[in-house]
Amino acid sequence: MISVSKLLCGLDAESDGLRYDAADGSEKPQITDDKQRRPVVVWNTTKRCNLYCEHCYAAADQAGAPNELSTAEGKALIDDLAEFGVPVILFSGGEPLVREDLPELVSHAADAGVRPVLSTNGTLLTRDRARELKEAGLKYAGVSVDGLPERNDRIRGEEGAFDAAVRGIEACLDVGLKTGLRYTITEHNVEDLAGVVDLLVDVGVDRFCFYHLDYGGRGADISDVDLSPEATRRAVTDLCDLTREYHEEGEEIETLLVGNYADAGHLVEYADREMGTDRARLIYRHLERNGGDPTGERVADVDPVGNVHLTQFWQGYSPGNVRDRSFGAIWSDESNPLLSGLRNREDRLSGRCADCAYQSICRGGSRLRALAAHDDPFAPDPKCYLTEAERDGNAALSRIRGGSAADAD
Amino acid sequence: MVEKTDRTGGSGGARSADGRRFEVFVREEETDPLRHVGTVAAPTPDAAHEEASKLFAWYARDVWVCPADETHRYSAESLAGDEAGGEASADADEPRVYKETEGTPTVSCGGAPAADAADNDDAEGSR
Image: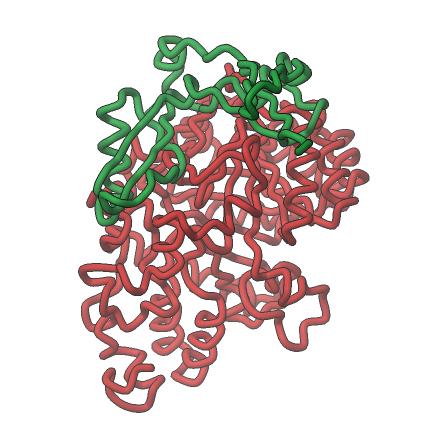
């Protein structure tokens, strides 16, 4: 996750401690350095969902999965995560609000010292449910909207889904729950991106989280409508411009990018071009501390039946199940050759990722997309959109380092 | 007398949220032990081998796959003890039965019945 607004506009953000070293001088609470060494855990509490979205990585449906973790097992999992030092649990799905015990689980996480946050389609969020979740200790709700009404409803498989999601967002804001947008960018909705931001700023949303498509679940089925590298570059550039325009007008919106660490290199290049080399150097240093793609390190997933995954999008492989041994034991077991390989991926990345000048802030981007495109988890990410000169270090990096690319590192 | 480990088979039941999964075992060199490295989602053993090969081909000499739902697991621990729910809980309280004969415990088969693989195939999504 990369905070465009922080890097380009210097915005403080409550969760920056998870993405960077605790932000110096931030007046808002920061999560300690110590806890940042543990992953944020996405828990797909159920596979059931009242919508049927074309890009759903969890392949959610109305039937759900047999043998989903019970309330007691969920609480035991949360205790397990707390003991391991996990800083944040993201309750996700399916649609987590179809679980009646969600407030009980949120409360258990808050009491255990694991910050509870929510990912939802928003359509089941009434003011009463939002208030109940806030009182249980929920800190943030991310609501998925993937376009203006017509496109969103087509993508989400339900007429009226857009209006229902906006009502859900308003319900959260009404009860004082911090709420943001989650938007997965594809060819189907890239044209609506700026319009959705404009519309939801008016509603009161100030946090916008944009996801690149990853090729897991039904997301793999629509990889043909993923943006081309050129279109991705334009969309991210537009988002940078949009963020800066809002800030120049005094609207301190927070914009984040998830799922493609080519964005890190692109932000450095953008800043060098638009804001100067000093700003680009500062951004580069922040991103070095950020650590690049977090797969198998700073993000983890537990699916509805307890399988642990290396990111929420990579459901096809699991190094273990929390019904068999603790999350911490699974996550710490580097006898697993894939887990240890990902944590030392610099030694294994191949092709253009192997000697990319931006490797230290990108780390090869999505290993899942590499696997989907090349049958090799250490092959290049097909969604890298940096130019050859940028990857060679002959563009912004040569100026940041005050010399040639040969000075790198 | 050394107290023997009390294991139950309570962690059985379906192990996939989407289609079939296979437990994967790999061996790096001929003289190495077979090592469990997790599970992959796949509709058939051959597809599971193919998926596992993509992830471990750079590493393993041997790759074995076993249907996750047909694996009976016995453990001294469970995620939520006696409070475990779902299908797993159906047998969680079943006592372990063993006879102290020549020292090797005989463990009861307390795992929940393996889910019908055909049903899982029908439930399979995009994978």
